Length: 95
Image (cartoon, rainbow, N blue to C red; front, side, top):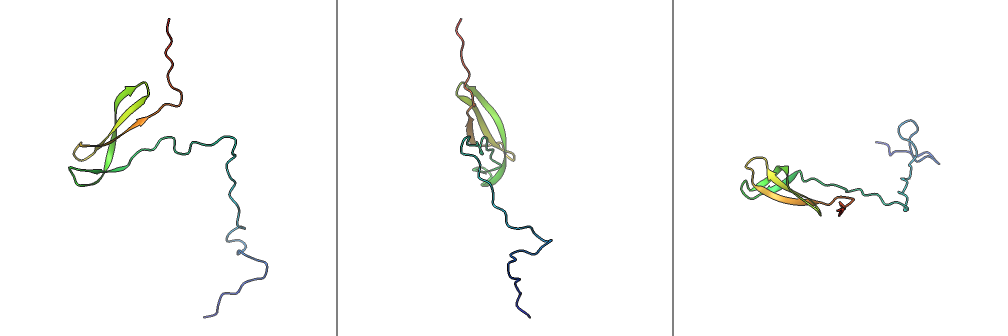
């Protein structure tokens, strides 16, 4: 077999891929909330003894945020919980 040949001055094959491009950084003025809400898809279930898909159930509505419980879809055992904090906390208005 012949070794691949390189063309001087070319780093890519025209028509196959464009020139390498740099990714633009997000502006530092407004940081983005990339992970605003994460949901668990698989959690370990102690009853099934395996990582199983979960179902999210609203457990409590609190002033600090909503409390969710994760349930195993096979047996219904609670496998975890999370508290979802609202972006704007509610304001109580007194008369």
